Length: 310
Image (cartoon, rainbow, N blue to C red; front, side, top):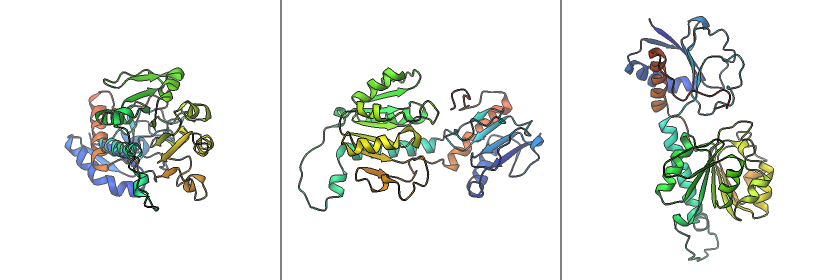
């Protein structure tokens, strides 16, 4: 029997994904038709972007899984009509890109590169930074991305502490959890990286209270989700010198409005949501493997826990 796979995403996504998806599905030996239009009752799998016009999943009674092209699922996980299994995207290419962004900006702030790159007064300042083992880093969020970034930083000798809402055991990375663990993880962190999922429980994880726990002058890197940080609290902490710098890749509203104070703040770096992106070539293999698993009766990869929201 030929499978019907509905691609429910934008025209731009279709242009990027159609060829690699067909190749990846064929490589798994799956007889399938990849299409942008199909009768709902005939669809076996939906490849999905949460920005899609498809928002009512109830008619897709034969659909065995909804396979998201996005790593974040906050825009779909609360959809009451979605009763099919939902799988988020964990793309090796996206992970590599995130690791590179996090390591690059960690090293930038650790080495104090900005004062040499931007030095209009030609100031000769021979002050040397500490070595990596003297610069504690805390990783908020120890999922696939957080763990990969934590391991990369630890390989460079940064002392990395991981924190997550629930207990995690990552070889070589001490991990804390819960409210008490968060306070402990922040209390020594000179650099904090936020890679938590966006859920009601994680919103404003960094707020006036938690920012005050950090050592004075600590640096914030946020390539995770904009709502993880209370914007007003962060600006106040920057103005007070409690936070030395914030490099932000994600925001509550994107593109970041031109009048937002982050743009003009001297201790804020804005990057335009480029820390990591799904690569069609590698993501297509993840999707094809999940379709193969569905047909073989095996557990799906990266299935979302609807109760936890990720």
